[in-house]
Image (cartoon, rainbow, N blue to C red; front, side):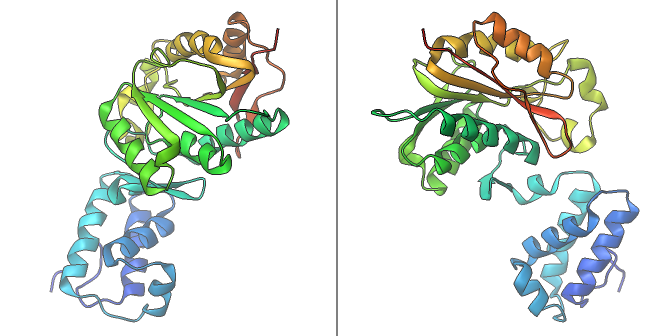
Length: 298
């Protein structure tokens, strides 16, 4: 029988299929080939890691081979694993994706970390904390914060109705639907303050740089969520003044920044009468990733 594109024959074991798939992905120059192979085989067989280990010697049925092969073809075409599976973990929680949402990335957890640090330093009393997430996408940042701040209420905005539906579904699935609302608007135009935290991962890639991005990003992430205009700062110029108007006294704005953008973003924050009172928080690669400023009390 002719082997399929995965590089193994029907009747191969689970472990054999995983190894063959990893080798096939590695030969195609795909990073993290071993992890991708484990995730794809596990998803195709509906097995978690423990089950894959305990059933490693079991032979695959023909229909299982077909599912693994279908996933393999998509990955070899550089479709991200998260897109193939339709879900990505962020802050330890699963988030469903849609064509209108970015794949949440570990770098963005830096925004959550900094927001929590600031919130815990300036604890409010006597009222329920309010959070806004501008350009919420899948809802990852907002829902991570609501998970960590149990008495808070949050609002996510997006121009995409599909993205808002995805975020609303994620909120319900994570048991946070009663503490989250989602609004269709450009940036924060439909919001009324005050908010204690405003967070955002806006589009910040300069338009001319998008064709240079990896296939996984430029062909599969929505351009609306990537394209930051000619210099990459269009979204910041719009959202920072809007956020400043809607922050409570003492409240903070925290945004994600691209490499080399932190200083210019701080300048925009200062121009909007916000106070930059701490350095940006760096991600695991040492890149200043989360930039913040506060609205000082009168």
